[in-house]
Length: 165
Image (tube, rainbow, N blue to C red; front, top):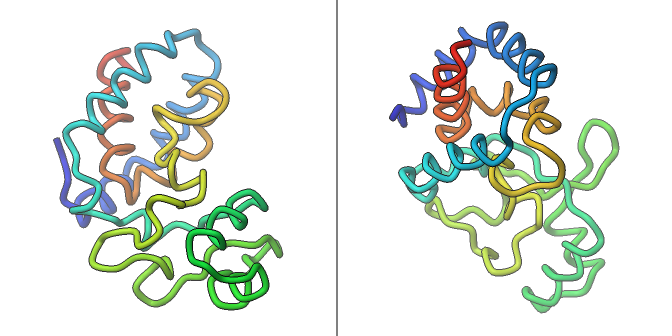
């Protein structure tokens, strides 16, 4: 099980075009979603995300109105205060959680300070085991995530090995 973030970034980048081909292969061939999810569950069980928290440093978190309602209630702030202090617009003009130089505004010492009220996008991350639709329908996300998330990197490698890709 590879967990070294430097190696994952290097190997994930090296295997990027292979992973795009794998993504296309998986989308065009039938595979048991249950089996793919089980691989994800097994790998997630072996990796302590609080030791990594790279997703909170690297990725952008889109938020919904429902997420905002849950977070404002949890934090005890108004919607306007939350939007002003804890969000920003991404390049497409969508609302995301604010990022600092260290990552998500709510990341402290590799832990989420709003974990109990975290956005659904965060709760489902890395979207292998949880998420809507089949795993193959979410594959577009995994190629990039294989460069920063140990769970996704190891899952892709495990599935490629299992299906003989």
